[in-house]
Image (cartoon, rainbow, N blue to C red; front, side, top):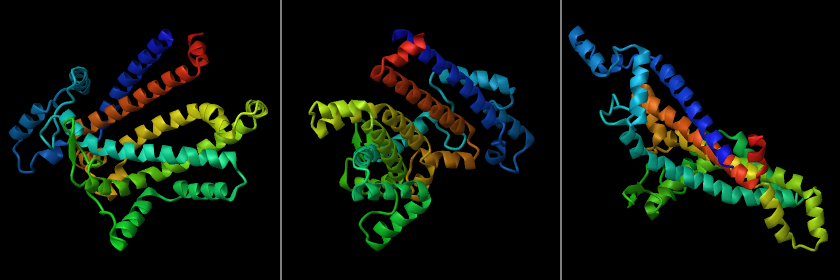
Length: 324
């Protein structure tokens, strides 16, 4: 098991080095931020001074090596637009996106998995067919349209929930969170529901497919022949056997939601990472763009590493197969 862990960690390091080079070269090949930052009436001397100040007069390979050395020390540089360390800027926006993602993915999992198991356990029941019919909407309807409908219904017509913004925050361990106050939670509900619908539909269908497959196996037949209660069969066998794909989807969906909640944050004016990256792209704020994309790559590499280790813990054959 230890050899498997070391192997996966080394692979993750190689992937991150390759991704950092690709992201750096790709972002720095798009546009020239100096056209945005330097006034049109600036003299040539001022232009050269500003370019040299940001290190953009050096060859690209040298800029990358300097950047890589700084990243290894935890320094992603300073934002061109906000004139503050990029790490500090991203960390200031992270709690808003993180709490929205946690609420959406956890809610979708806690609701979707039981519904999917029920739909697979009783496939011919009217309730199961209703669940599967409703789940199709999660795949079919665009998230921006759902967001607008949620605002129109619950904020404009009914007036139950606010249409946007994050609302008041409560500091917990030095970090501001909206979900720990009633008013802040009311601001979080609509964007969290909008984010959760696609995940909910995916988890329902995944849990149903896994349950249907397992219910036809000899394991379930023997368990029923042994006189085990149906709730015990579902808890001990069905839920355990479908845990691996659900863990995978949960991890990947958590990462994708955390990294790409751009549409939802834009519709609901949510001050998170999605809005930050959109503003950075508009203003060609290269340090923020590079840091964001590298952190997203690190997030997915870490999630995949954790999933692989979870697989190895759930099924020791995985680590033995890799070792062989």
